Length: 295
Image (cartoon, rainbow, N blue to C red; front, side):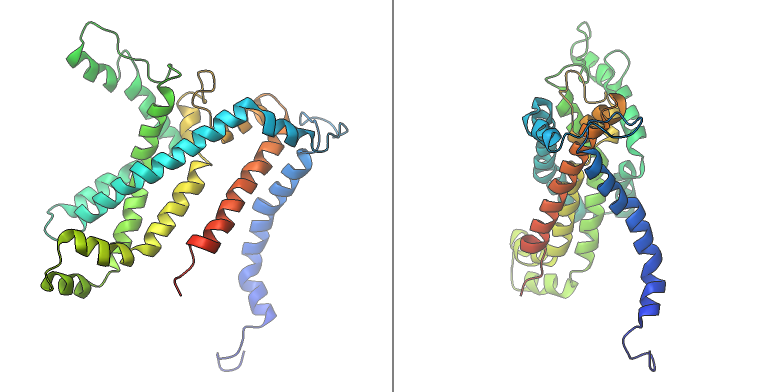
């Protein structure tokens, strides 16, 4: 470089980007390629891969009823996140960012705490909360029906997915709230004051000033929520491994069961590749049509 003004040299780029590129290749590219190779075989992970199946594993994937069920559950998680979790996070962000609200810093920390907990600890914690004999649900149930047995929310196929959704909302809305708070803090206060002086109502200020100013934050939050909805594993696994009868199954828990518990590495690799492409297609679509800056 000349005087710090020229283009960076190849050596500079290699030094700065080389370590990150090596790690990305080893931890992302290589596993994806290996999974793609595994997906073409019927292989239990032991010995050489000799039983070549070609695209048979992929045909099985599209016909697998449990895959359809798991993907539906992932889609439900995504819809619930968009319809409940993100609006709740935005509402709380608006409340704690209000200068008239006392104790805002305490509530920011309080609402963010669930996200700090690991997914496994969260799952185990809520297992105790949902326990029909000595959990919090039993205590609340006893106030209204002291004689009746509390419902087994994680043991009933009709309620297990709803119970998991409650935990996911509780766990992650603090992250999105923090993203929205950052977006709110980037909005110039002069714009809001000018709108108030012009006689705009709170709703008009929110619609015409706040939402446009938070466009990037909302786009980022939606992106994290959608991608995360198809990668949910730890919480579901800690709360019952997707059972009973696959009623809480997600596509990642099913991949784990197939690949590592049933030693069907080939079909597990097929599921992994399909998850990768689902996320990749969404990412490309989102970046191209929804996440670009307005002209």
